Structure formats: structure tokens, C-alpha cells
Image (cartoon, rainbow, N blue to C red; front, side, top):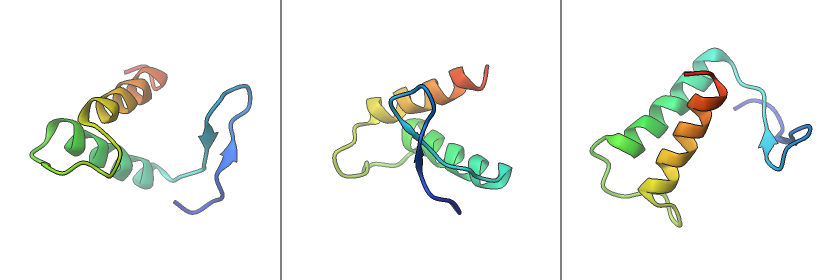
Length: 63
């Protein structure tokens, strides 16, 4: 991810600018963590939290 993270306008989260390729790679990693064969989650994160992030991302994209 190439740019600084900034607070999102009218939201409680942060945003950053990415290319389509960077976005696809990040989404692919979320799919693998949520539904793939990965056994170890990132520290302090559950599989359900990863699924929630992925579903919210898809919802915002209209998928």
C-alpha cells in the first residue's frame, strides 16, 4: 500500500489509496484467511472477524 492512511470522511475508520492490483491482492488474502486452509490467524484476530471484514468490503462494493 503506497500512501498514508487517513481518516475517512464521515466514517469511523481510516482509508488509503491503492491500485486495483493491490486491492485484489488484499481481498484475496482476506478470502484465504476467511475460507482457506490457513490455520493460524493474525494475532488478536479471529476467523469470524476476518469474515466480517470481507463481507463488509463486499457489501460496500455492491457484491
